[in-house]
Length: 327
Ligand code: SF4
Ligand code: MG
Image 1 (cartoon, protein in one colour):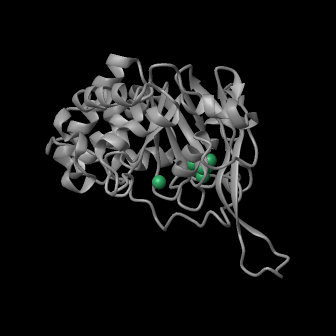
Image 2 (tube, protein in one colour):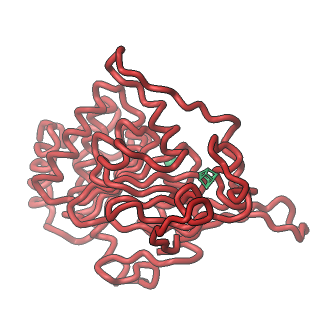
């Protein structure tokens, strides 16, 4: 709730003009138990910063991360370690996220060891079971990461993530570095593990097709802010935000006869150091109104399943009765 993370830009230590990268700015959303919540946006929009704030790898400047009603940002020491067990992460680069000097058994067993689960021999047995769960031979336990392909390494990363029965797994671009044919295998693996263990995923990607395939609900992020949240179906059949529509229009479709107009956005994503005033998308929005560069749009509920932050739907533009909430 209200999560904000700015990074200071130190141009000169004597400069009075302090600038900040406004990586995440007043972000609100909730993830429901057992769902896959997709977070999509172009690179640099703040998705990874947000995931690191949730994992408490970095501290937010403001806001709350509520888990079972408890604010994680207020936890320290043992209480924080206990809660950390509930969250795991699958990283983007399967080539960099595994220690090359450790065996697969040590890598997957590390969370079990850190959290003091199981003794040495039970741990080995558990690692073999985990290898099988992610579709790898238990005989690989003494091999090193370089002996595996990218897809296999990501399976190892997933085995490590599920080792201590976490309740939330954050997948940050978990398949982006893989070949397309391997991507679907990993996505299907994540799917089946979710069904088997009732896992909850925060699934982050710049790739809308991948997010669509995985997610129950989706949040679209632009320049540090969430601009639209909807069920996957509602988003793909009736996106409201002009940015979401542009993103959707760029997904290739398999049917050559299907008519689809591609919305090409002008310009580049502005710098998060000096984001545009008002709506941050106003410099590129094909539908911008005069109010857009002045007033930041509030979130409006289109339906119970669909919220959007855009003046096209606030009473700035129409005399709608949209229920507006902070965000
Ligand atoms: Fe476009 Fe205005 Fe909506 Fe922003 S608020 S997306 S500029 S119409
Ligand atoms: Mg990222």
